[in-house]
Length: 143
Image (spheres, rainbow, N blue to C red):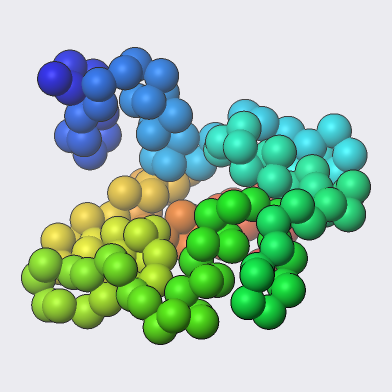
């Protein structure tokens, strides 16, 4: 059962906390801030990974080539380079991807969904980084 529904895009969630976290993609809000450099993140897990930049920590190592990673999911994705595996396949066109996030982004091309909306002007984007780049127009910050 998924009783918590996003009013922006209609996506449903089983936990209210998941809905709240999801809503950050529409608002562009980044409530988790690095105390070292001030960079903001949508998810606390991304902040923890980012903080390893400041500590120099690379706790996950590829057994194949020795390359280090700041989080386990990046190591898993890297492993697919060695195996050639592309485990995420688009049901619409058959194109496959190494990362689930790449598949989801690709699927927006088929659905026309543009879930990242600028609150300043209403323009919507397929990818979050495109919204972030766009928002710099409003802040006057250089892209």
